[in-house]
Amino acid sequence: MRLVLLGPPGAGKGTLASFLNKELGIPHVSTGDILREEMKNNTSLGQEVKQYVESGGLVPDEVVIKLIENKFSSDCAIDKGYMLDGFPRTEVQAKDLDALLNDLQKPVDQVIYLDASLPVVIKRLTGRRICRNCGAIFHMKNNPPKEEGICNECGGEVYQRPDDNEETIQTRMDVYLDNTKPVIEYYEDQGKLKKVDADRDSQEVQESLMKIFNGDR
Ligand code: ADP
Ligand code: ZN
Image (tube, rainbow, N blue to C red; front, side, top):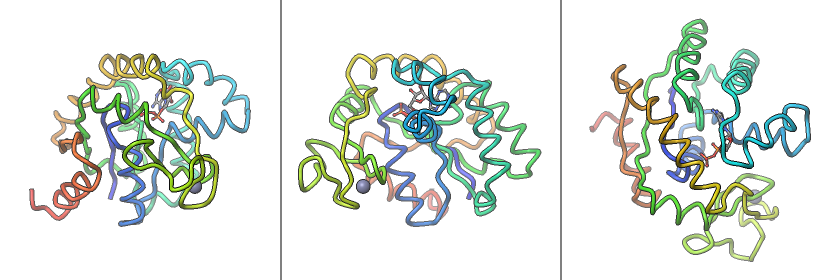
């Protein structure tokens, strides 16, 4: 299955991707994760993108498009399909992606739009905590780690992303509304968009999605 996951920050793309990866074995490609890894390793790319990511702005299109090109031309795991999370985020990225995927003869099958409202995403993102080691996602209120600061899955350190503060979340939402909304229309016009109510908890979202995949809707 070849999927794009769309939706505002905090809509639950990462949580859903990790579920689909476990359930269906689809490889997960997250530009946010790739960029954070580069920043952690302090590579020249990491240094170049840091200011954008930490302020909640977008990394320039050319930079992320190059990342995806490299990933897709080097990684044969994507022969089993892919699940793009956090990309495309602008119309330019969406068009370049289509060109690339047509060349590779691996066009997008479906685009899942996780539709979540602003008050819900603010609550989720301000409480969000992440395992530095395995990427498991927690929430201080709804789903705290059993032992404070320690990941249930792997024992790694649980931390708060520096861009998960209220001010930066607002910037990310504004950026989303200005740049990513057009991407939703772009896929809607192609007849590929499947909209899911993402204000509900993740288990319900997962059930709706499995129904979509089974063709029940
Ligand atoms: P979220 O969806 O929670 O906002 P991500 O982990 O997807 O976060 O992305 C974090 C940051 O990485 C973004 O705010 C942005 O700075 C950068 N980024 C990720 N993907 C892209 C992209 N496709 N284009 C431009 N910038 C990106
Ligand atoms: Zn972990």
